Image (cartoon, rainbow, N blue to C red; front, side, top):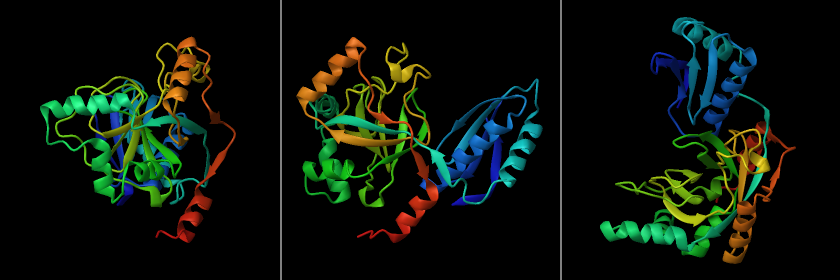
Length: 286
């Protein structure tokens, strides 16, 4: 559900939570990103930073420069000036992410977890069962069959929440209960209806089934893709997963270690929200 008006609440003494709805959808996320863009463009004195999420926006502000009530009033005014559809088109980089499916590292991680929780179905098989897929090959075809929309960054620096743009490739999965104590860096996971790429070795709860040697987070900014930011992705980017084998994985990993790796991406495209919605309306969902 989309709220007719933003809902505001304090999130500490210098943060405001702005909620635009309570669903996980592309349309709502576009509205969140459009509002974040408009607030940045307005350059409100005292607003420091914006963190767009799936259905909400966290606003950091300086209470010595602007009050909570005045910041809310400014954001309400900006929202009222926007069209109901959000934006018609946005700059959108496309990243091709090389992925080794059903790799030995995530399988080791899952098997270690199952030593403590033996009833846990191995993650690829659980995903197949939950989504009516015949086998691991069908899971890989489904996962690589669409571009993904970078809806948000969060939980861990550089971790992206990815929505499939083709509804025919939409999958869902329950999260681990309890979560894992560790996840290999570069692991691909799926939880709820979202895919993520773990940017570092972290705890985790998504079902895991693949790994990429391509870094999405670099605190030392060694590679050229990180010259402007520690995190690779930005909300509004797109991701396409491309399957690779172990030899290619090792080759890419070596070039990353050497500092010569060039992230495969396209940086000159514009994503048309209107044309995407037209495509969805004409799509044969079956």
